[in-house]
Image 1 (tube, rainbow, N blue to C red):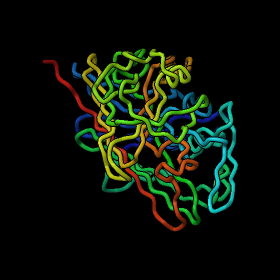
Image 2: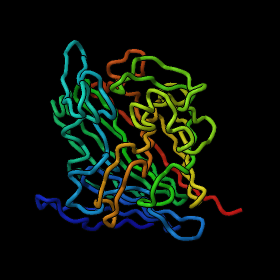
Image 3: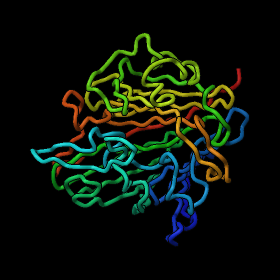
Image 4: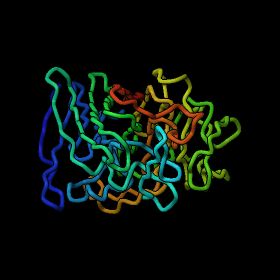
Length: 354
């Protein structure tokens, strides 16, 4: 195991961004930035014996402030959408920014956690890096002072785990996620339509025209959202289904099997072309599957590559969208003085030629 730190370059304002590289004995490499606590690279072996970086990412530090689609960023305090751009907690109403062209808040913007510097630490006995952030009372419109840390750890068997730890001094909302985009044929290789996905969920949360959950939990049976059996991403993506039409593809929350905060198998994905596979486990109840319908990163990907529509997919572990306003959903409220912990693990596998 090796852990390295080097310079990724400087932002337009001159501040330096550092990259942290974790490498195991297999040669697998995972890289992260102290700007946004971004998961920037994941270099894994393919079936031909070479290595491919399967994460989309911004190619240079000067373009990080405009990072299209939040590639690899930590999202917080609250991931996904909050209807009406506000919520009530303990009898007080809190207003958030309307930052995505509608009457809602998306990813707690516009002052995103993914556009800030995080403090980095390297634990001595693990192949890991830990990023921490202080979020003061009133930050992004949320109550309470929050201390949030995110630890990335790479194992010898190619398991990348993300451990979140949050502590606040008063009641607040906490629902972080990582917004990594995967392309199992390699970043910049084109469409992910031919790659296979399986999601271990029997229900989803229907939404209105602004993609805000209605509060209903509906079965997947007979819909183009049903990934209980493995299928190509492209197989039903153009189906005449309202949530697909509204989003221009997949951008839906799946209600994972299991109850409460128990660990569960969330999803699998694989590529026949590269032989690279991915298995995701989490202790959170929801998974947002997003097919990069709005991605438009011209010339700012790694090596100056273009990343276009459907050039990657996201598996975002989370509480259900708008859960702070939906009493029937598992609550994202963190009580003052309590510790909130969560782990999501991505296991990268290789399917050999038969």
